[in-house]
Length: 256
Length: 256
Image (tube, rainbow over all chains, first blue to last red; front, side, top):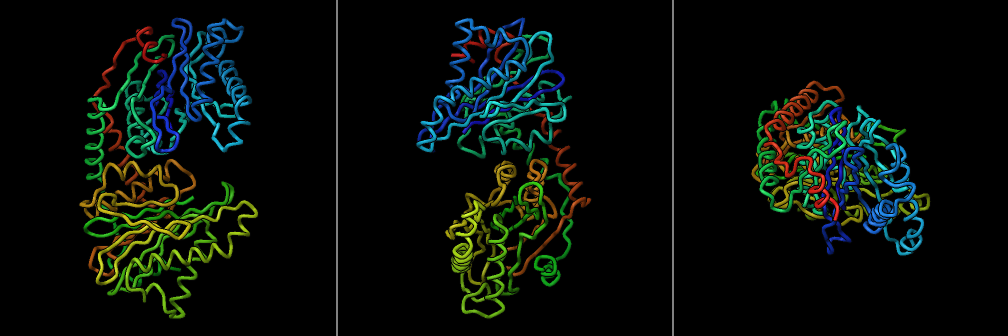
């Protein structure tokens, strides 16, 4: 599996991804899943991918080829994020059109998802999720993050701590902790973690980070987070139990 | 969906379940999923269920019927938790044998899972998970919890805070927070929450609790947990960014 997430706040964007790929549990590799297609000064375009590696690599290759060949439509020529999202969706469709019948015959999963975050000069910064079918949704202030891949383990921390007014640094820490929570609970998500932040109207990536296996910062943040959680935990108000070992009363409640 | 979990520590057991059942998102109901089959003084047997409601209710009805009819094998006559788990697994198989062909024809999910926790006099307290196929696994000191249903959202908090030496009260709070995290992130899991604790060698349920929608304790624990998380969050060490807006350096790392 994979876990990638994008966060959009009034201040900018955070995109993050793990790098583990597996075919079953007995063939685990590292592949980059976060790609930077920015044209500094004019636009920032960040892509994160999940799902079938052959399909997502096919899409990334097609995007790169259009750039190299200066095709009429490419990630540096399109004039809006809306067009970029449609264009990436079309690439997904064309790779799937070619490979899907062959994968489907052997029961191999061909699904994929893309996150696209960025800003093109003249527009607001935006974050989109493109589905395997090529259609897409956009993150909104009320729902300031989008996830792809193994999303469930890392969602509670985002739900509890993020909103559209969260600072860039806090959003970046939140993204790291969300991926770290997922790595801790699911072996199919693993380092290195790639993390990028973009500040709105800057048209250039602000910060980036790659955390490898055994990275001391990753170890430190995990340890401090666990200590903080345990401390938080000990401050919880004691449970107000309703009955004390009164089995009959309990049976009234537990069995109809 | 549903979310139920069982925790086993050296001190006893905690079992907890939500009560939401849904067929799609447009038919949501409340059904009990935590059942007490204890015989105080001799044994404590707690069951939690997830999956097809018609199958799990069929199993619970069969268990109750064997008790009423004083069948040779019933939850009060079997002499070990191992036998109890095999017996419940057989009931799952017999309900599925009857209904599965009809459900399968219409593509209706017939899967279910059971948690069985408790202690029979003369044995250690135990926690088991019975799969839809009737086979089972047992929780161990190294893995002191088992979950069924919508398990992923609530797993990180268990992974980070629980071990076999956790106190009963802390384990109960942890169970509540795990369910609350799931409810916050997934609409298919909802109150009332049922929570029961059992202290080893007591052969009677120790504490129980039912938290309904809008329960002030549930609201309080959620609010305090969110505050504690945000505070923990602000204490995280700042991210040590590797490069500052050096796009070329970033491209080396982000694009091969």
